[in-house]
Amino acid sequence: MTARVIGSVVAVVVAASALSPSVARADDPAAARRLFEQGRAALDEGRAAEARDLFRRSLSLHSNVATVFNLAVALRGAGQTTESIALFEALIAGRHGTLGRAQRGEVDRHLRAARSELAALDIVVSGEATDDARIHIDGILLGRARSGEHVAWRGDAGPHLVAVRAHDGRQAERRIVVARGEALAVRLALGPRSQAPAPVSASARDEDSGGVAWFWWVAAGAVVAAAGVTAIVLVASQDDELEPSARAITLVSF
Figure 1 (spheres, rainbow, N blue to C red):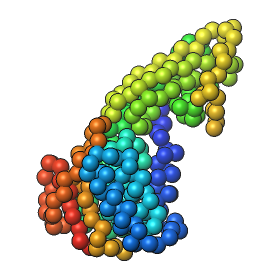
Figure 2 (cartoon, rainbow, N blue to C red):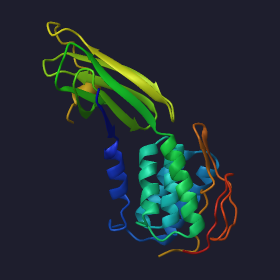
Figure 3 (cartoon, rainbow, N blue to C red):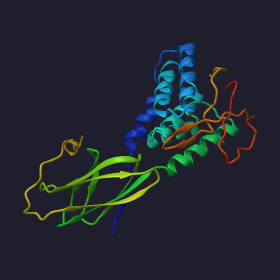
Figure 4 (cartoon, rainbow, N blue to C red):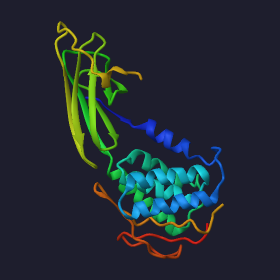
């Protein structure tokens, strides 16, 4: 029996490239600061999706490592786990600026937590033998599999449409809802070769289809849950050891 792992690489690549320091942007620190403060307030109140959008707008005007971090926290709270992981990894790699010891530890803590929140699917195609069944998730081609072969996928939690189509037109699909950190087995059974293909659903049709002092590191201690994000602000030095409890680091300069 063969198992293959296919991840949500598209979201990760887009996230990493969209916030690359080399990407040209207008430099307006004052406007960026206002958006950052609005995003911080939204994050404190558990409005993760609103905070995400505000932090994105802030970054489009002025690049700052703390804003990238808070955006990653907001994405995690909004359920966009794969994109959140990409940003945490970019921060660890130093692609958005240098991190102090405490900052790096806080980013690593969030990164490990985000990875544990990825949903997992174990997809198996059954039925009359086929050599190149195409597996789709939410209309995007994930890969090809033989009958009986396991294909593992990890990505964002939530509702998904999993579909399989054989080269001879046979197909099957299943709608699932997977929670954060949950693993589900998905079995898709193809009918006999003589069976006429069912209409293709619309969702499965597209087959191959320098720092500024006022920026604060405020959301490092955010507690992320499905219901929202709550931030706790605490001033700490870069040499302080982090405790398991949720807390944040406020920086006055970078």
